[in-house]
Image (cartoon, rainbow, N blue to C red):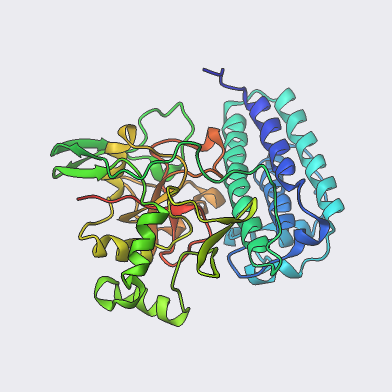
Length: 388
């Protein structure tokens, strides 16, 4: 077991990894924004630096001078309490600041945080830096999935990294179910000393009926059966909202799938590859997952069922849609100030996803992590498993 790195070590590793993830890109890739919810890579580089500057350096360094006073307007994401910002749809219009200027900004912020850590041993500072580290890890995952969307919608379907494998070496197509007995179970993060987000707090008891959950995720082969059987043409298995979304957007198969001369392929970060039959079906919406479950006469797990069963599941390669709405746990309270905007303001009209994906940094994974997205989104590495 590897020793836990110090906050300083983890900060340096995280800042370096973000830049390593950008090394395969060409300069022209850094500014592209194909759709609203996909941000240009250069924006992620700037935003993760602004977070440290705004929440830590400006508040804890005497007479701190901003690297550039315009960067708060450019790189603020959704923090209304900090004032005006570039709207999300316009991030792709930011040809300036340049990539080189943003890299200079990153170097400046990294150096300043390291100096602060060397001179200030305040536990509150370390907690804020740790939050910034995990915030940047979130953006590393977004960076990978945004880059995949950018390149995957380039007509040439270019390779991002020929060594970036999206599937585990061992793949299974077996439907192997495990049974969880009915009873009262505790849900939520248990150790306040370990990093977690505020939406994981409020450890509480839930009653669960007995259930059987599949150890494996639904595979491409299984999902092809759904397509072949007319799953995308049967309104009886779809939510009304999902049927409307599917019909309006002409959805007939998962994102990044291509049928060429009768053979299915998928775009990956390694380029266009034949569809791997035993790999988990990926890049699908909650609507599609729920329709498939209906077609099989089964259902998706709730987030509580998933968490109770997690230690016995094969997890970690895909974010998994659950049947749970993203809601606060009992006793949930937003943090004071702008940090209260981090999670609580999004607890409406979204579904919880559990697990983690091949794009999630190792230090960012834990069984109580509550990811959340709107049910139509599918550009993340999303998959699902079934309950019977």
